[in-house]
Image 1 (spheres, rainbow, N blue to C red):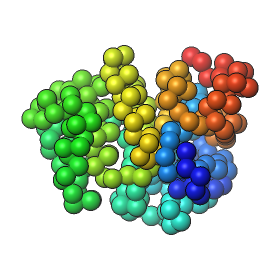
Image 2: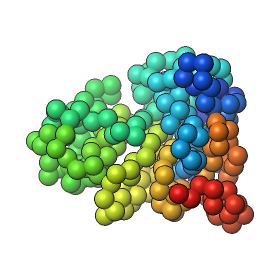
Image 3: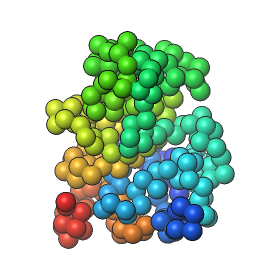
Image 4: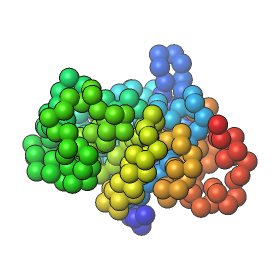
Length: 235
């Protein structure tokens, strides 16, 4: 992890859907490298937190700062331009387009197609399916495509919502390996129900419970001193 000031800072964030508040005075920070796991049971507010940071949900109050710039009132596109990337839980690929067409869409905001070769080197399976419709890919391949497309935006912080959900175990390990490698170059905020995997690859872990963080610290500290909290997260 970097010793510099956090790249992404969330302060006193309150957010939800209509009159239903989900997040309550949430404080959060991400450095410029490493993996932070956001853990919690279903309904704890994990996805709401990512969507609010990305601009898909307008906060009720609070601040979101990225590299010193205030983002809470900025559109999602502007957040992408600043260096935030997002892969939602449903992977959000364009199923009626080919793999290659999906990847080209990922280069639009940066006007730089040179990264496509880097993504194909990173996820070789995609290179074997460039002309295949994204809708015919396996669940794991669609996750790789969604991550690859997000990387083409040249993010400095990548928000990932359940990247291994519905993915075959062999592909899960491939994705985990790639995320570990990426963590040396950028910051990853990882929402993941696969508790064992999240704890294995993350540097830090934050636990959400009913819209509030009940633990923030190193993964090592969580494993060593908070077995009761981990027990509550187990399925």
